[in-house]
Image 1 (cartoon, rainbow, N blue to C red):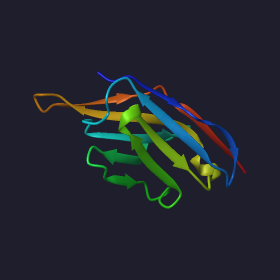
Image 2: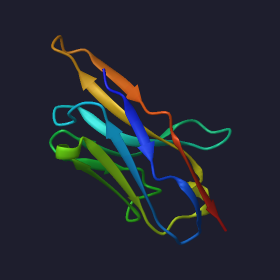
Image 3: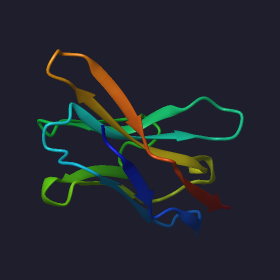
Image 4: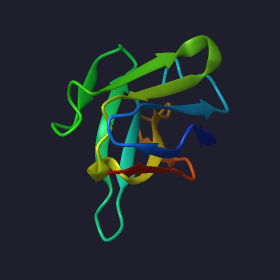
Length: 120
């Protein structure tokens, strides 16, 4: 199992920046992926950015060039640097960890979420 705790959310004006952090309760070195998802009111949860154990990243088209995901294996932490924020980035942001067990089965774990609000 993995416990995840997000931090760094808040209120920011359009054009501003925030950095989200996700601290994991165990080593993230071998996790299949770690990522950030977001869910706006009345919307489905969507992928924002993801990083694999090999360090490959992928981003939603809407955040490419503005957001950067990174990981610090020594601190068991994943970050999401968000620049040039827009009002449409307003959502609850969730950290996700995908774990594979010794039988090859994969599981998703989620943090409780952190609110990001971008004012126009």
